[in-house]
Each structure stands twice: as C-alpha cells, then as structure tokens.
Image (tube, rainbow, N blue to C red):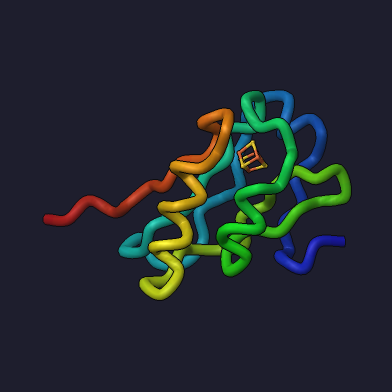
Length: 93
Ligand code: SF4
C-alpha cells in the first residue's frame, strides 16, 4: 500500500491518468505522463520529497511541491530521459 493514500492502477497508467492535484492551487505540482514513463525511478531519486515508487517502479506523486523542493523538482523534470514528468506551476495574476 502506498504511503500517499493514492495508488495508481495499471488501468490508470494505461490511459495516461495522473495523480489528482492535492494541496493549495498556489503550489506547483508534478505530473507523470504514464504512457511515456519507463518506470526507472530516476525522478524518485532526484525529488524524494514528492515522488515515491509503486511496486512496479512507477512514480507516484505524493503532494504539491514545496518551495524547498522546487529546485529538486525542476531537476527531476529536466533529467527524465523520456520527458514523462512535468511541473505544473500556478498561474500568477
Ligand atoms: S524519470 Fe521519467 S521515465 Fe523515469 S520513472 Fe520518473 S517519470 Fe518515469
């Protein structure tokens, strides 16, 4: 069982579903493009504050990215070898 309270199913991964947005809409969130992800877990190593791996090695986003973890989140996005990880930042008005 995931420690995040959210566990993606194989069906969710197959359809490209992503973990629901949690936390404040003012905080950035990471999203995984499941069809492109190859489950190698690099992102979980780079941003352990926000990503854990499921039993198949697919990343699960645990919550919004804090200011403290933002640099790690950006590094994980740029380091993903399959461009399967995105950082969704809030729109500033
Ligand atoms: S680094 Fe990219 S391909 Fe690897 S597990 Fe994370 S999202 Fe998937």
